[in-house]
Length: 372
Image (cartoon, rainbow, N blue to C red):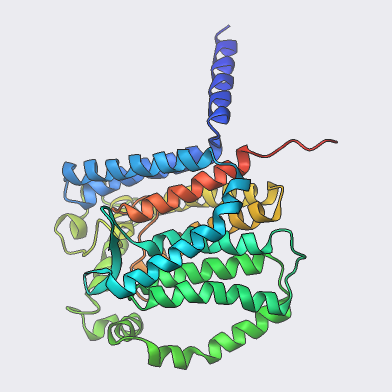
């Protein structure tokens, strides 16, 4: 009897989530990482409950956004995509003209609520490209690919001018992912890769001095151990000192003694490595992998081109977040200021990420049963 009751309870819970248009596997993965993130953030912030409460408020707002978007039909999302893209581009122009400045960058608009329009483009750009490709023959023609890349280049260029190199790279990668998922030929990919490599010298000369310094620091962080190389040196020390199983929660010396900069935001992955070791890092990466795999499953099961491309792009975007942050903290790529998804302290990126998961849940739970 107890077994039947447990089965009935699980069935009731599943039906409840289905009616709320929430995907159980994706929700479980996201909730687990969020919970881990709160515990790690408490340690990384120096045992500050104030920081934890603020993060809890951000998570609550982000979860409400996720729930709201999960209720929206994918067809409605498709119809509003061009309007969302145009609104985002207009706001980026306003940022360049009269945006608020903070930390040496002009990235914010204040319309009663202070926010970064660039975060909106992480969803608006792939949605716009998916809208363009919907009901069009695939793979796209060369002319169509050129038009799609222009749609990506416009917001990427404006975000890079703020300057916000990390976000511009993420949005550029997301847009290119949609084009790739549309089925472009291997020849086009090889030609594009060759042209990109050939253009690297031009990119170098267009970079700002501090951006060039980040690249040079990646190659030799010891050249300025107390300046430009300090972040990455301390991060490597923290991760390496964690060993296999770590020093234990709240016992990391680099984090607790404040040797590690930005330990609550961009470099919180180093805190995880120090306190939970190689084992803890692998467990977190496994959770991320399960979330990404579920996103790809939803993309593969989607029933129209728009949903398939958008779901694939959102899943790849989450992967890019994880890869860029972990590679940055471990010294594999230059520091570009990308937070560890669902773990780092911060509100705007949290809302954007959970909004994307809400769209994935909408695509999965609004699928129509096709006749056999």
